[in-house]
Length: 567
Image (cartoon, rainbow, N blue to C red; front, side, top):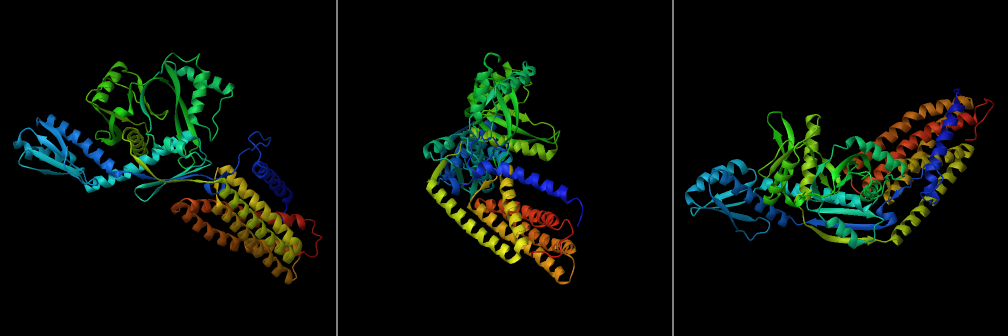
């Protein structure tokens, strides 16, 4: 046998101890105060621990109406710039799905000229008709309606994701269903009214002046916060964390200012990956209520994307005063307490329009950042009315019953499989049993390390992993038995058996992994949960069925005195 088995066996023992230490708190339901170094628990899905399931619909009729009214204001302002006097008329269509509005011109003779101007600037947005009495009638174009629907769905999900982050829910699932519905699953949440109130609110957008004069003191303040034992843990409410920081630093911060953060989160798990502190003013004179629109535009000279902002009349006045009073300072754009952007104010900005330039980076990266920023700004400025079409609480009794039945089925199935292996392959079957137990242990440990959510389909994936692990052991053992029938020594039979079985095991698991990758990429909800567990199980199966089993057989025949194998 190959030398060095003792080193590999020691590594396996250490790996097993680490896996046991990570899984033990879950297995024995220990609290966060456990003495184990790894104190994480497996996140249970909605079907296992219960929680809140909601289906939200979007009222597109209101969205269409708001878009028509908003574009009407823009068109009237544009016509006035072109010396054509006009005013917004009434909504002239009774069809809520295709609202139309009138623009009344002071001079009927300006109809053709007004049509040419509006068609040039709004040709992709509106359908325009003119009448001899000096009235223009317009509605939304089909292409723009499709863009509006996609934007409304995306920004609704963004708002909900921000709100649920504040709710402190671990592993929520927020996915679109069709083109006008959103499915929200909140494991562990039972209070429907509170969740509905939280999700139904529009994201709070604020424009706050950033104090850079004390920027050098921020690292010292954050060190003081750490020494005070204030840390952010996954699952905590970020607003509570920020509140504790500002309470701790109340005596140190300049009057009228507080700490806020720019944070980056994983959109799948809501886990915060990066935080950068800012010193911002406590109050705000300009909020998202005054923002009319935010969209991505291109700087023709530098060929760089930027975010264009348009304010309402009152908002334009406030923004002009705000920028004029804070020239040379940075203005933080804060959404739900998160500093999304901090552009420099170069001078008084009048006219109700502004632009936000993005940082350095390649074109695709900057364009992605610009779209994301415009998305969250629109989410705060243009609320979409969500209709709670369905909501239900999945009780803990259902989750407990599902867990009990899944545990019973898994234990019975595993016992029968392992008993058969021990009966048919004797001592070698015991080795197979050890590798299968380690396989399940490593799978659970990986789920904890990755922060994955375990659901009923995930349990099915673990059961399938056991079957795949048994299949790998059978391939190896039958190869070894074939070599033994040829009269080869046990040591050589083990070596050849593992060598010949490797590619058969690899091929079988690779093809299964390809199917799992497709399920992960194109599936949703429970299908993705099954795929995650399956892919983790495939990795641990190949490792335990081949490498771990080989180490144990090397230990078994290490002294070279074995004349036969119990197989």
